[in-house]
Length: 237
Image (cartoon, rainbow, N blue to C red; front, side, top):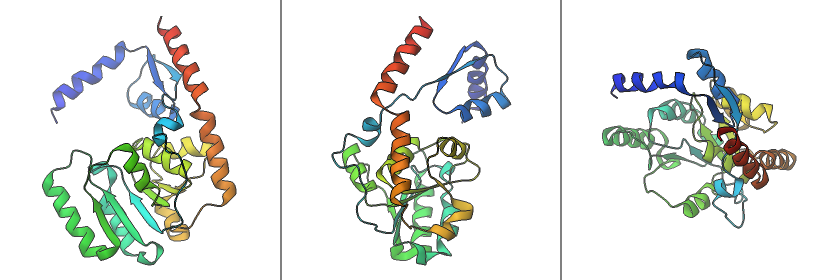
């Protein structure tokens, strides 16, 4: 990365009046390191249908014991840390799919990691290399009743929201501020570092799935999205 260009871009934040997001925790972290006079504007931009690709049956397949790991071939996915945990708990899952079809990682990193997956997990590990359109990707997600996103920052929200709505057990890192976002919204997520050994790929209860759906629908409804766009336009007028 060209760090000088990055620093120059960051200086522009002093000219910005509004921080528009639906995740206040992001604003809190940004403000901790970059003092500002911005006003936080709550705005969930997308609807659930947009996240889910308008699929006709937004439900998981039968419990497969499969795990989706990460969302991209990037260092932020912390794949090697996840792999270390999975190798000691092979009896807790059927297959782990590591997403490498998107992201900026070099070919050498991808090749090295694929070899590690095969060496450590054998037939229980697979790298996802083919880029899929949204419909095919959603159908693929429906085969994974569990997901692990070990990012230390807000990332992969589209995957996370979609999987929670489908009914999956989603693990996040204890270091990720979006863990607090979901817990405050009373949306059931699990902590990978301390809870994977306890729950593995076990299903959420029907009540937990229903509560998760209702709470996501409150945030990402069509009406909510339309009202927010109108409010932002009025704010900036």
